[in-house]
Image 1 (spheres, rainbow, N blue to C red):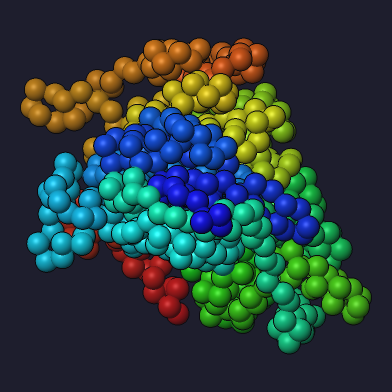
Image 2: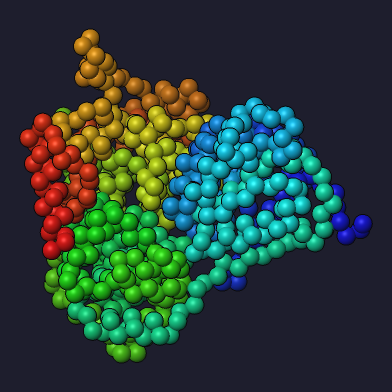
Length: 622
């Protein structure tokens, strides 16, 4: 049997993954960069044994929280523009379920990650095995079935030879820009250890093309005609601009034809902030001048965006009666949202083809330079005003962000995800370079930030990486700070301590509530959570793990801490004490976001907020 090799299923899995490469635009690179995992009885004697015996060259990284390690893998794929992944393995039961949230984060954001949870015994001899879910209606069900709704591909490997069919199909999905997301292969623990005589050819090097969807001439002609006929075109730059490597093409297009560009959270940095046709963020967390341009637009070219409610301000920004939306996207469903003219094509190819088509007609958008210059100047003044905000004796969050911006340098990468920081960053952060603004806002997943920073550092080890995280999100998950120390992958964690869930506290107060259950306070004798603020030293929490720590109450102290952290050789924690409610708010953007305000309440302010919400809905329909 010279053309076959006897391996366990786990050994074959790793050997196969080790030989997978991707190619785009003639550049070939490694696809799977390693395995991140936490071992338990469901995977330690299968995948764990295979990794220990070195059947592949894939490195093993020890995670410290299953959700956190997948977040790191997701951030790695995002920073690599979907041109590299990590596989993540867990034991069965709780370990596997801890990965479900991060799987959803990957799928919502259209980012590839391979999940390898251990599973129950295929032969069922020891049933019910430790941590097995006994589901009486279907004995084939385990907790890993919970991955189905959050995965773009799911399979359970009941027999070792099943890999021959399942792995290539999984790879096809992972490397497809239009279909990618979380791929889950559930691995019964007995099958991981079973042997099979695999064809040697199965383990030969394979290169998967990351294809660029071609530009269809008929649609290109339609879009070219629309641009020539409309008076107020605007481009919405989404994450797909980055993933397609289309930032330079977009910059040339905007400068050549004088078309304003606004950016989603995922698209931020598509243009340098200094580009004359960059008008900042769009949507609920966007800039007021950018949103005003959107309201007046009669043609919107939405490039590589899911057009979710924060981007569209619950669709209110796309309410111009004569506006046409063109969706340039590799994903047909995303391209057709908002009744758009679907343009299913690669972002880079599409922009380049449209550039050629419009140049042939000598096109230039009919905006007056005076009007556009005034609105861009208004955005810049808005940023400067908010970063110098007085917070009545306490350090404001916006001032702290200004200090960070001026201190860390233009090549550093910031990572954030949830809470009030994404709104402040989208409105205020000035991106000088692409891929320096890493926001997970498709799922707005608390706990992503520290792990995400680690994934970014793996993707770009030469850069300084900063996790900007609220105290609530830091408390939820900071376990991969230990992984960063263990792996000698330096990240700087900046904790914004405002004493609670600040963004939700502000949301309550903006809709009639006085704030309830969103501040970190002691319970009083009468059982209310309105006592003194809980004093937490986040710098010492970092120090307990081995990370140098600083606490900053002032702008000067924060600046000095950043300078010293930059000189450190390992991961650090900076605890920044900021005032609750000292960031920007949705009023800065002039955009609406629909929420479920109570229709019946004893509070007059809540009743008024409900009236405002209902009127906004009527205005949108009318």
